[in-house]
Image (cartoon, rainbow, N blue to C red; front, side, top):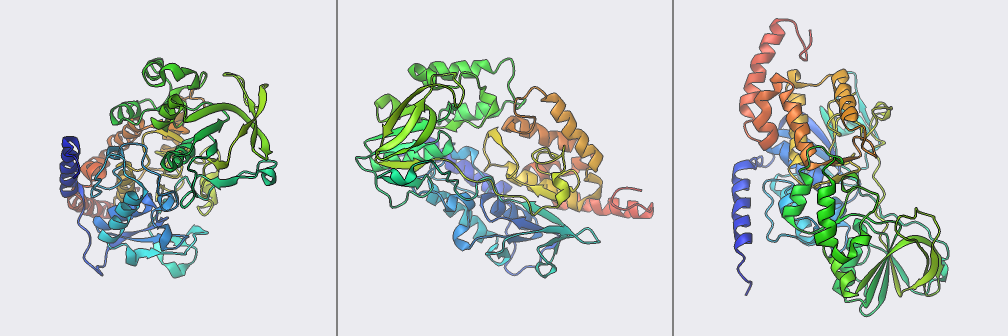
Length: 500
C-alpha cells in the first residue's frame, strides 16, 4: 500500500482547481472553428500544448509533424524509459489540464499527459503526420502557405520544433579499436550494464540521462568525461524556483550569493567541481542531486579534460587541472571502461523553413521580439525553439502565454506591434544586458520572461483588455466584443489594421 503523502495530496487538489478554472473547454467533435487559423509546426510538447490552447479558445489549427504518430511528444517520445523530469513537475505545467501524480514524473507519464491533451482537444483530426515543413511563404493577401496551397492558408504560424532534434554522435578517433559497446544516451532502452564500468562522454543534461541508466542498471561505476565544469543545482523545487525568479536574467553584483551558497551547502567537499570562472546566470545548469551523491559514494567519478581517442579498453583522456582551458596541458591516461555512452546531446532543429528575411542580422534569432516573434512578421511565433540557455523550464505556462499573445495580435489590429518598435525593444534589451557574456538573448530566467510579458501588455493600452486572456486564458469573449466595436469606429474613420 502506497504511503500517504500530504504534500502530494494538496498538489493534486491544486492541479484539479487549476484545470477547472484555467482550462478552456474542448470544442465539440467535428466543430467548425473560426479564424484566425494557425499552422503549428511540430507535434511535441510545445506544439500539442499550443494547439490545445488555440482550439480551446475557438481558433482553428493544423499541426504539421515531420515524423509519424510514434513521435507524438517530441523529444520525450525518443528518450529512454529510465529518463525522468529533472525539475519538479510544479515547473512543468505545460497546460492547465495536466495532472501529475508525482513530483518527478518519468518519460511514460509525460508522454501519456501529452497524448491525453492531444486527444482531449480533438487534435487527431487536425494533425498531419509525415509532413515535413520545407517552406513558409506569404501570399499577396498576407496569409501563410505551408509547403504548397494544398495544405490551405493560415493567418499565423507557430513554430514548435523545439531545441532537441536528432541525436548528436560526433566521431572520436579510434572507435573501431574499442572492444566494448558504444551508445548514444538516448538509445539505452534494452541495454544492460549491471556490474560493468561505464564511461559517460559529456557533462551536460544528457549525462544526467546516462547516469539515470547507470543507476537503474546497477553498473559497477560511472566515469564522467567532461571538457569543463558545469553548474549543478539541487533537485529541489524551492531552490530552483528562487533561482529562476532573478528578474535581470544575467549576472549581477549579488549573484555571488547563490553561487557561494551552492558551493557551501550543496557541493560541500566537491566544490572544486563547480565552475571557477563561469557565473551561474550564464549557462543552463544541470538540475540533479544524484551526480554529486554518486561521486561521494564512489560509484561515479568526474574527470575534467579532453578526449584524445579510443583505445581497446577505454578512452585516452587528457586530465586538466581546474582553470586550465580546453586543449591546454594536462596528464594523459586511459580511462578504462566496458561501455561508452555518448552524452553529446542533440542537434538543434532547423528553422530554415521560415522566410529568409527573419534571419537577417542584427535581428536574427534569438534576437527577436520577446525572443520568439521576428520583427518583420508579428504573425510568426517560434515558441520554445529560439532559446539558447536559461534557468527555468521549457514546459510551463509561458507556452500558453506566447500562444495567446499571437492570437491577440491576429485578432486585434490595434494590439499589433510595428516592426520599428519591435526592433527598438530588442535594441533596448541588448543595451540593458550589454555586459552579458553570451549576449542579451542567449541566457534568460523565468523572472525575466515574466517581466517581458508584463511589459508587452502594459506598453500598449489597447492590449490591457486582453491581460486576463493573455496571462490566464480567461475572458476571450469580452475583448472580442470590444474589438468588434473598435473595428466599426476604425472603418468609419477609413482606417485598416489600426493604421490610417
